Amino acid sequence: MSEKKTNQTGPFLIMVGLMFVVGFLTVVNQQFQTPLQGALLSNAGALKNTLATFITFAFFMGYPALGSTASKWADTIGYKGTLVRGLIVLIAGLAIEALSAYITDAGSVQIGGATVPIAFFIFLFGSFVIGSALAIMQTVINPFLVVTEVPGTSPITRVSIAGSLNSIGTTIAPFFVAFVVFGGSIPKVAQLLLPLSILILVVGVLTGVVKKLPLPTPKHGDNESVDISQLTRSIWSFKHLTLGVVGIFVYVGVEVAVGSNITLYAKSIGFNKELYATLTALYWGGMLVGRLFGSFMSKIAAQKQLLFTATVALVLVLISMATVNPWFLVGIGLMHSIMWGAIFSLAIDKLGSYTAKGSGALMIGVAGGAIIPWLQGVSADMLGGWELTWIIVAVCEVYLIYYAVAGHKVKEEVTA
Image (cartoon, helix red, strand yellow):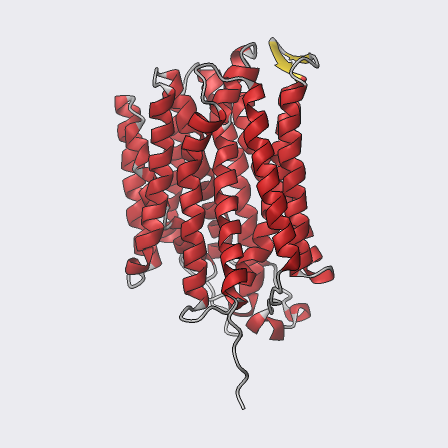
């Protein structure tokens, strides 16, 4: 007698809502760079871009810092307990960022010739804590989406729905920062207080709801039968995987660099707040459109998808640099939208019993979201402007073209 399936639409909708929160807060934190550069770094001199982009650096460093810890928590206290813990950490991170609004008069420190308020460093720490919280949450949300039973859906459908809501969150986030958080003409740190307090309240309610939800327990799936002790080779001995980790690193790096630094670039060449908020929203909107229609490209080989999108992205970057026009960078969002899946599938191709370890290794590449946007900010200070710094993005796109043409090729297939 077959077991009757449970309708878990409620828990599924909560998971979808959490994916929206993850996307929304990721981009909100990036968009704080430009207004806080004006509010806290007006006396930072030649370090103003280096320090502003450090906000994104701190956020994304939370992923490698807490990713493995979250996996251990899932094994020890369970997936639901880990998710609740992640939400509590998120509340703490939002509270720390809000605290920076209270201590704007707490003094400052000298870094070279720059005067940097202590409030800025408090905000940086809050960014790191929020990034850590989202890393914890994402470790368990996707497995929940896979096992949560909703009539008329498959695991892939549920993950796609949640991914779309994630992208909607990233698309509206720039307008939230520009017009809700910093609605005045001159950004002030005090403007953080009310919006962040509301977000804390919302996340607090979500935490209470998640605690009471009867969430299913994700299983490890087919990889459960793999005897890890028999996997004696170094995962780095597979060249196409190693080059794929670099590919994920540069891809995540340029995705975040364009999404977060385009506002600083637009501001530096005279764009007003309304325009640079629109630039960023259209960029993330392109990511949303690409992901919504990405399923129609399933019959096209991942190698061809990556080659085409990376080539078009490179052309758009070069045109933007030649014309000093950030509008061309907006189109890169559409190109970036399907790169993750393409790189991921090429990198784990024919790894056999090493597939799970290879997938874990690829997560290291997420650190590119911390490092590349920050290196671009450092370069902007060194070069005295943002115009030439987009060569960093161009070089990354060239690497992705190389990976699509040659780097992805499997030298040795694992048969077991």
